[in-house]
Structure formats: structure tokens, C-alpha cells
Length: 217
Image (cartoon, rainbow, N blue to C red; front, side, top):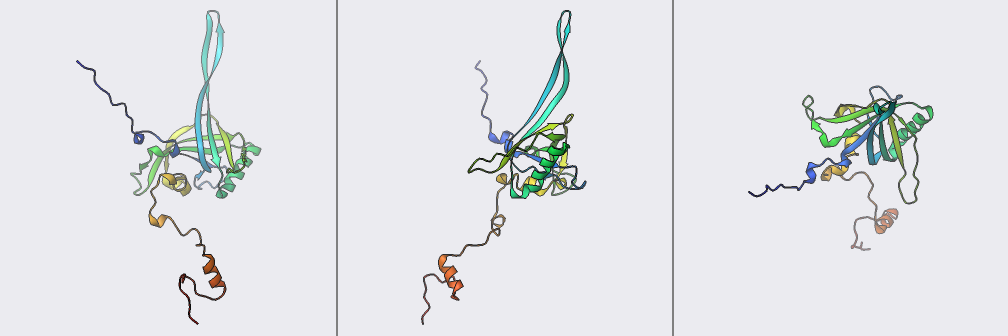
């Protein structure tokens, strides 16, 4: 009998995309009913869970005993102009050594909310953390960004977050590269720039939009 052939091809759609991991943040001085905000515009991010061990020396050898788990979230944050409050909030948290709330949202697993029609739910991992600092990378011809390590106190907790708990930036800006745009989604954000001729005519009392025609005297 011949060997059974196995299709080893894996479709990209079957894989979980790192681009769909978005981090949210909230400070202890924020309103208790305030929304979870997006932690800047993230690039590379990572999480680490590292169990500690200790060695106990016995007569017949060494025994390793498990200890607490050390957990960190590392986020490479590109700062938008709108993120000034978050940036300054992180600096305050570092200087005053206070914990912040941080969420890791996995939009690969987003689902429609059966309790709220037209809304979604997304699984999240939540922890209280001390940011290790807010270093600024100021390379020429690049965007200002910070690579921040959040040291989780204790252990993070898994749960589900409702859409109404999230600042819309998290799923509109953070995931915009994965959304198809319609014609009404683009435009209206900048003023049109007139041609040099239109600008001259407007400044001197002529009619614009008549390129290629001449008024007769």
C-alpha cells in the first residue's frame, strides 16, 4: 500500500496575524468610566512569561523548585500628535512609580456580540504594570517612537472586552490597514489646492475654473 499524502500547504488566512494585536492603556487618574485608549500606533510588540526557579541542595543532589512567573509586555510605540496625553501620562507613571492598566487585544479572534446587536467582543489579556521608562528614538528622517517594557505585577488575566469599552481609535485607526475603504471613507480632511492660475484669477477678481478660455473685451 502507498503512503497517504498530506497537504502541507497552510493558507495565510488560517494564521493569526501580528498586525491584529493592539494594546490599550488606562491611567489611575483617568475617569473610572473612561474608555480604554490605544497605546499609540504600535509596530513590533511582544509578551513574555518566564517562570523563575530556585535550586535546593540535598544530600543526593540538587532539586529545582518553581517560583513566581515574571511577565512583561513590550510595545514599540510610534507617537501621533493626538497621543500627547498618553505620552505625558506614561512619563508621570514612571516618575511617580505608579501602576497603569494595560490590555493586549487579539483582533484575530474578534466576534459579534450576541448580547448587543451590531457590536463586537474581543478577547483580551489584562495586567497592571509599571512601565520601565519612556525612551525616545530620535533618528533623523524617522518618526518619533518609544520602545517600552511594561513589567506586569502578579499575573495578567484573560477576559473579554466589549466594543463600548474601547476608544474607537483602537479598532478604527489601529486596524485601518485591514479595512476596505469606500468612496465616502476618503476625502473631506484637507482643503483643495488651487492651481497657480486659479489663485491669480481669484486674487485679481477674475473667474476661476475657466482654463483654456479667454474673456473678450
